Amino acid sequence: MSSCTVCPRAAGEGLHACPHHAAELRAWLAELPVQAELLAEFVASSASPAQGRRGGGRAHSPAPVDWRVLALLGPGHADAQSPDDDGAPIRPLLGAWAGTIAYTYPAVYRDPHGTAHTAPCEAAHPRHGATITGWCAWLTAYLPYALTHPWVGDLHHQVATLIHRARAITGHHPDRHPYTAAPCPQCRAFGLVTVDGHGILCEACGYTAATQGVDPCPSPSPCLTTPTSPPSPTP
Figure 1 (tube, rainbow, N blue to C red):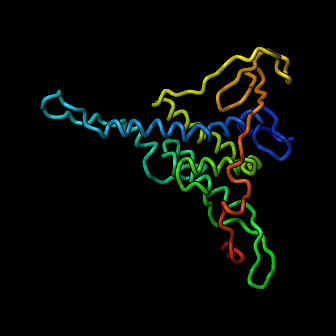
Figure 2: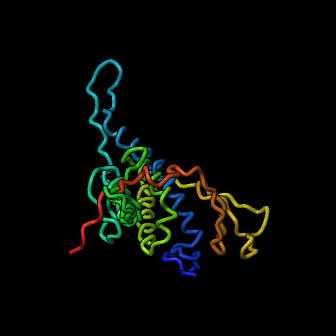
């Protein structure tokens, strides 16, 4: 059994994140589109000039938008696994991670002669478009695969940074509710809480009972571009 790359807890066989941090990452991917909508309201309100007094007068200039909002919602470039990209925009960073997963995801294809080959996919294609919502759905679908790689700890760190940056602006945090009906089934302490979007977790030992929704991409193939010819040798 391997250890979690985020904390000292044990991870499942062949996995590199404990159930708690796997569920946390899944919940953050569900929360990011909500945070993005709230951030967009800051941009919309700043773009509309304030009205003057009824009966005439000039409208006031729009309030300046918080540059932190633009830094999160704007275009840009991001490198997955880079320690220097903690200030990257949301959409480019999610897209970069989708590319990282796609480039390592094993795809089986046949060449013109009918011979089967296995090679990494060439690109990721979110069904709902290359938007924050689309990339979050894509990453959620391929999270079970990402959990089998050591770099899932970097993915967890960078998505956590996005969430904390967004929450610092919007002030929106998932509600936590004490769950006192029963002790934790793992450590027997009465430390269970329900967290919106995170399911039930134990604050004492980290036990998680995540509630999972419908897989947004149940079939991997349509979400990836598979190679049409054997990959070129690496020089």
